[in-house]
Amino acid sequence: MEMIIGGAFQGKSVYAEQHYPGVHWTSGGKISKEELFCAEGVLGFHQYIRREMRAGCEVRDLAGELIKKNPGIILVSDEVGYGVVPVDAFERAYREAVGRVCTELAGYSTRVVRVVCGIGTVIKHA
Image 1 (cartoon, rainbow, N blue to C red):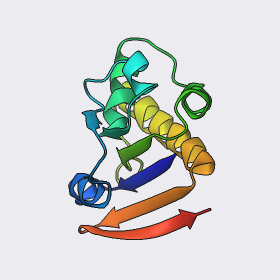
Image 2: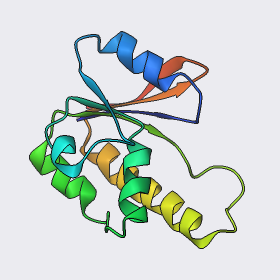
Image 3: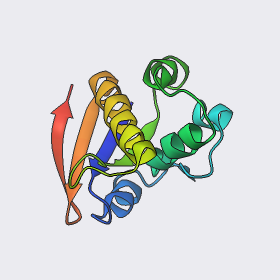
């Protein structure tokens, strides 16, 4: 598993597509759970978490499931935990869930790259 993370609109998707040209990328906002478990790469993984939570699904065990069922996946996700804490209860729960899931996934990952202004910095390489 590999991850590419960073703030919104920082060039993560372009970076991912340039550095992994043979990967078939899927949108996190549209992918089903079954597709997630066999996808090569997911752009906007945080959107998958939002959709699952909006549907009332629990994402607490998502990282463990994903590493078991699809350990070769490449995930691209926004870091959503910075800035002003949202007033809306769902937005706070979503923000926390993305942080927890991505932290666990980064622990499993062999490589994590943080992209800022289109420039990737490797923050983990195991």
